[in-house]
Amino acid sequence: MASNNNTNSNRIVVPAARQALDQMKLEIANELGMANYDSLDKGNLPSRQNGYVGGYMTKRLVEMAQQNMAGGSGSTTQNFTTPNNQ
Image 1: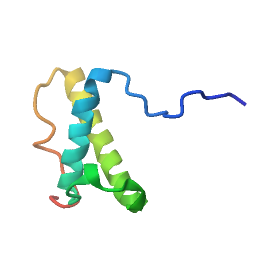
Image 2: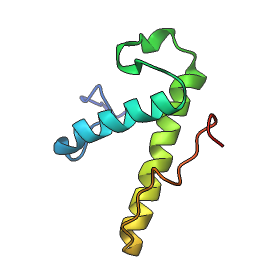
Image 3: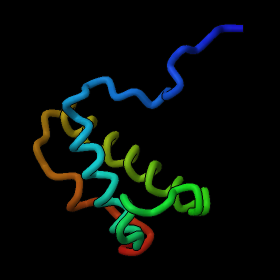
Image 4: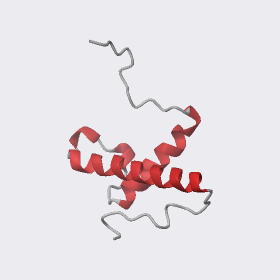
């Protein structure tokens, strides 16, 4: 059995991106109707709500990477839809 000394497997590869990722998380949570997400006790939220935030973050990051790889410079937030604004 492999030993994992790193207790947080969600390590940020580019530490300078931490603030931008945190901001994106708050924006997405707000779009999903979870105001003050940064001050909420995530342990008391249903896993579905926490999963929505992470899932939509992943979707947005993939869209950004695809645009970057294609040489596009458009904003992903303009075309991004959440359950509340479909």
